[in-house]
Length: 184
Image 1 (cartoon, one colour):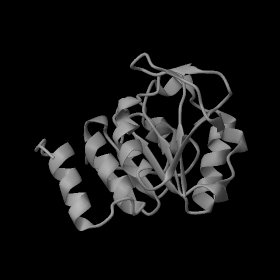
Image 2 (image 1 turned 135 degrees about the vertical axis):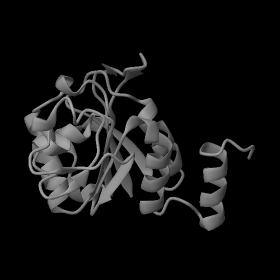
Image 3 (image 1 turned 180 degrees about the vertical axis):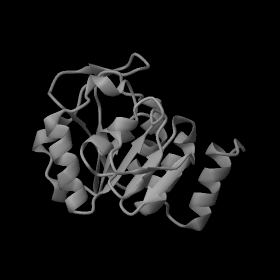
């Protein structure tokens, strides 16, 4: 299975690196961009997408992950909105963290759904019809949203939903290492 991660100028790479690490042990990770140029992450890393988002077929992926970043950088992008709706129609697992859930809201995916986001209070109009929940992480069907401080739990949940752990012992060890900071 392929899992796509959107990269764009200002994307917060740290919010999805662990998810990529955990999921990539079993599944192929592909980065997608809104165009084919290299972008600079919030941390200053230069990222070159593997492919264009517009070329990504909804039936070719098992999940689509949107990291946070500066929302206005890609707000209202027509290709992103169209693809998000297409992924949702096919029940692809869609995950967004930090400010990225606003893109799901703008695309209409959060109507009648529960969600969380670090930018809700300053941008409530970006979440029409959704129900904001102040929890660190929220699952509602095929959509997962999270606050940035929950990046470890976000990664664990995504990997678990995508059956990326060998077994319960593998999951438990990963929790001990990355959430509880025990030596592994």
